[in-house]
Each structure stands twice: as C-alpha cells, then as structure tokens.
Image 1: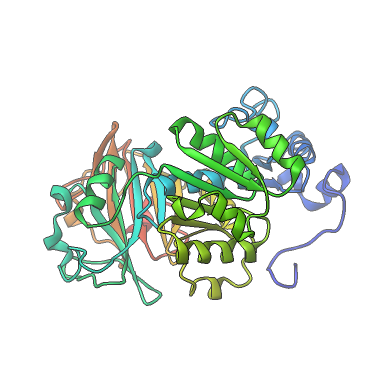
Image 2: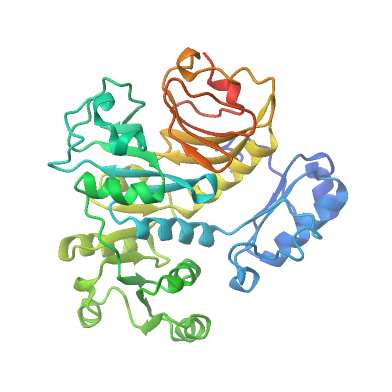
Length: 417
C-alpha cells in the first residue's frame, strides 16, 4: 500500500497503545479506525481520544448498533469521544433510497438538511431542454438551476449561452417538490415505484429495507443463505424474504422479476450484480441500481448500459473527506456538505458563512469575480431556499451551495478569482 500511495506505513496492532504512540496518535488531528471489527474500532478511537487525538472516526457496521438509523449509538457516542461514525452499508442504502424516490435520476445528492437536492439525469429524445440556451429555459420560473453538464466524459459548468444536446447528463438543483414537476415537464418518466426486488440479503439490503418499510412499498429480498433469510425475517416486519439464488432465471420468473418497478442488485459479487442489472435492463422497464465494491475496472463499468451505480467505498471516502473539510474551517466559512458529481469530475459543496467580514458578504453576485468553471447554485437563508440571480447577495448565516470542476476548495473565499 505504501508503494502505491504517498503515505507512511507502520506494521502492528492498532489497538496497542505503543503502536498508536509510534504512529503519532497523541498529536493527531484525526484518527480513523476501519478494521473489520466494530468493537475494535470503537476501542481504538476511545484509546486515541484518551491519548490526545483531536478527532476520531470509527467504522461501525453491525445493525445492532444502528437501531436508531438517524442517530446510532446516540447515548454513548459522546462518552466514547467519537467525532463521527461511518457505516458504508448504511450510506449506500441511503443513496439507493434517494434514487428510488426519483426513478428518472441517475444520481441524487441532498443538501440543506434535505430541503434541496441535486438531480442528475440523461437527456433523452424530445426533452424540451435540448437545443435551447440555458438562459432561455427558465425552468419552473427560475426555481430550478442547471448546475453542470457532462458530455463525452467532459464536465462543463454552463454559462447562459450553452445549449444541451441529446445524450448529455444534466445536473440540476431544486427542492424535491419542484423536482417532481421538473421531471414531468421535461418528459422524464417519474412514475412512483411500488414493486421493488432486492437481490442479495447483505447488510446494505437490510438497511435499505428498513428505509423503505415506512413507505408502504412491496419489497422482496432474494437471498440464497438460509440462516441469513431467517435473520432478515426476524429483523424486517414488512419485507418479503425469499430463499433462493438470484442468478436463477426460473426463480426470477416465478417472483415476477419482469413486473418490478425497481431492481437493486446487492450481492457480494460485483460480476453478479452487473449481470443481473444488464439482464433487468434487457427484460424489464425497471429502474436498475447496481452495487460495485471493487473499483479496479471503473473504466469498463462506465461503458456498460447501467442505470445507477453505487460504490460504497467511494461514498464512505466522501463522507470522511466531507468531515475533514468541515473541521478544517479557515477564513470565514465551514464545509457542511460535499458530494462528488459525474464520477468525481466535479464537486458540489455546501458552505456555512460564519464571519461578518467575509469578502463575499452583502455584494451582488453579478459584481463578484468568481474563478472559472464554478457556479453558485443555491443559497439557504433562515430555512428559505433561494436559487440565486445576479442581484442576490450572500449574508452571514447563509448556507451557500457551489458546483465546480475545481477540487479541494476549503473556504468560500476560494471561489474568488
């Protein structure tokens, strides 16, 4: 690993105080524990916290620790000195849940506590956005903003004269309520998902089913391990658990695979997930969501006709980077939220303005000289969502969302030319 990355490696037991001391845990700004054992990760963070580490992040995956999906281990987290708990399966399930809400979207990223989201979708034939300048679209009376466009593997932050064409991947920002109207207006099918098949009874499948059960949908999980089926049956009250091999075409036919509105492939084998999703694309009209753990063949996967691809490792890394940037607040703003868009070719960041003397305060956006390839796409002020125009300003206390192809912005002042 040290040969591939510019890092220092130390061989030893991470739960040993001597090894942690050798690694510099006492003076560390951040310690991340990601062993395969949840309890060991919690212990390492507790030990590092006692030694003087400023921030600690533990990977905690077992469902028993996540009975409260919104605030896991809430009663003991502060006592352990934990800054953040990371659960890759829960993060992936949350991402999939967002996609199921909007079947036409390839990606959905949430900001401002869920009050506003960025939706990415592909421009199909007859979409009214095709061939029109961005300035002339006036989506939903200006309540929707086009953030970026991907064309031929290039991400473009469009100006007013840019014209989308068929096949472009367009990312827009708006409220969930306006998103429903947008997909209808732009001829994107967004019929509500009712019947969902999850293939593979992994932890991600469990967390996803937990999120879906309150929505009163028909959810099936196909899992070939009998013991795991029994465990899922005990933990999930409103989900149908079917023992069988998801690669068995006869079983899929019996379970009305071709009638599903959404198929989610969550086996532990990437190749199976890809093959099942391609089969679903060929035989059904379902929204297909594919989980991929290994990132070795990314370039090949991108060429396949898959709807939405979920990569838990990338999502987990994003969550950690988001936290690191948040605690590394610099001149006058904090990074509240960060998402990679278009396979990492662009970033969407939400900044919280915390200083009165910030260089951007109270100036009309049209009078501010921003760096190229950057777009201020949303301002949240006291709960109100503002899709900004040239005369709008940024004030102390605002949350500001920007989309850019520049990587590693730490402070809102970094957007200035």
